[in-house]
Image (cartoon, rainbow, N blue to C red; front, side):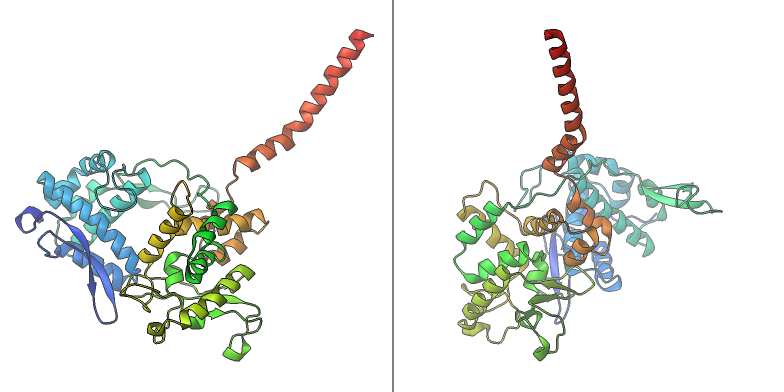
Length: 401
């Protein structure tokens, strides 16, 4: 019977670890003695280079698997036994606060987060069985197979019943509400808290162009076209705009979207970038760097910014602006999309500007807020209240007469 006992070869203290080459990299899992976990390394390496997943994806999956391996080692379970008793791991995730440093430390995991970890674990077992490291008996403990139609009956005639695989362990998740956004007042406060034009440009890239933080830090100088016409540089797109292209940098920056897109630049973004380019030109160390956003201070002066550095900067600006809660780069992206929706832009247009392939990814931005819900009720029943009031006045006048 094939099995893997982590306690026989590994020390506690599992953590994600980046394996970096000259031109590529991926994240794997090391134990407390800095020994790689073979089953995770095979899976994450295949995920990165065999399936073409982003570097950041392997980082997240490596972190998920490190949590699972720590549970297995701490509870004395082999991988086979852990699969057969996966409900114990689910319970552990639900009641154990997050230990790693950073945002969320000390808090309990949400059902969405737990489901994400379980997805990583299930896929690890698939890989282990496929490579002959574990017996296939573990898979029925993780998945249930049911027979049914792929589409509702009546949508397609003469459908054939097929087998469907479903995970046995998945927590129920409440419907996602409207994403948190940054108000105009908060955005103005963040801009006022900036000390450099680079910082203002970052806020404008996130909040006025809707870029992801990984997309912002991978922008190249050649991606920024601020003139009314860019034909001199071989671009036929009119007006100021940005080119967002699929890139991955070894320091973690990555454009998530597979498809390149063009994002128009408004007056605020153009002005901030104009001023920042002058600021950047004064940094001699940045002369040989083609990245748009560079570090202006510290030992890394002139080198490209990383996503983590950008996130830390936005948090620092939030504190400096006196905001009650730290703003995240993704909240600024949400604000850009919500502003488009409030201005009457449709799903297709918003999805194109955000770089979404699936319309379902964009639908979260058009969920009605409290004001829209109240306005709808007022439109529907305000007239009825007026009719009822008129009837009461009519009755009162007839009584007086």
